[in-house]
Image 1 (spheres, rainbow, N blue to C red):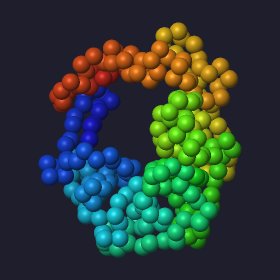
Image 2 (cartoon, rainbow, N blue to C red):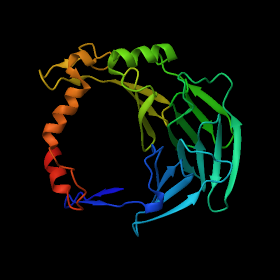
Image 3 (tube, rainbow, N blue to C red):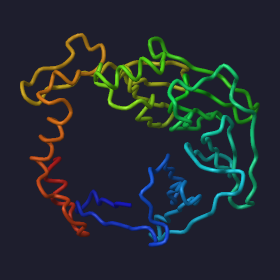
Image 4 (tube, rainbow, N blue to C red):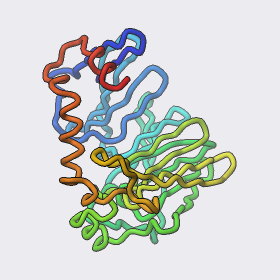
Amino acid sequence: ITKISMQNFSVKYFRCPEGLRTDERIAEILKVDNYIFIPLNMQRILLVFNLECEEFEYYEFPKEITSISTLAFYNDMFWITNEGNRILSWNIKLDTVEIHEKFPDDIKLFYPRNDWFLNSAIENNELWLFPGYADCILKFNLLTKQYEQIKFINEEEHDEKVQEELKLGILGRFFPSKYGTVKKIDHVIFCLSSKTRILYEIDIEKNAVKRHDFCIKNVYNGKLYPISADGIASEENYRNGPESLIESLGKQSGDMVKNCLDENGIKIYSLFK
């Protein structure tokens, strides 16, 4: 965990205990009050970082939970999805797990992976689940236990089409999962589509959705692509595709993070200010 001070621009690193270190891909991370919860699926452990005393502790998964893909908290319960087609709720204090109704039968996986959902949020007694590789956004009412599917126009997915987009770099798609970025701010949820590169703004209180089309500025000629704003810049708009961007960023950052010194924040601030 990296702590960046916005007052003196310093950086401090906190490493998890030696026996818990892992190279696995971390799933959704959750902050609740002064605690950060980090699922470690290979070890079947929920790692907890206390922001006040800056120390780690952990809980072992109960037998009903094989892994965690999404993690949300409401009413003393963690609300979880994983490779299975059900929602689970886990009360850590009581060490109890409730398994809820399975997803509606007409929800399908559009890509050969089992992570149905990769991001979640809770607002107004409703759990919002954003794909991974499910073919829709799913909303679950925590009181009535009813599901509702949400689909946006032109966001339909098919395995063959995704494979083609990844291979050819069509519309700048670099990964198959549906929504790589999901962020909740107050009563609004933002989610960025990896297919269309459209940022959706979901206002839960107003029951309204806005879409924001993205353009990319070419770092070599200063032009915006695409002109129509119907997607994101294709790889051919850059000299060597995304490698050019990485190369450009590398020249700026230099050896900024070659080592893990505790006080490296001034360099980071100087780079991005």
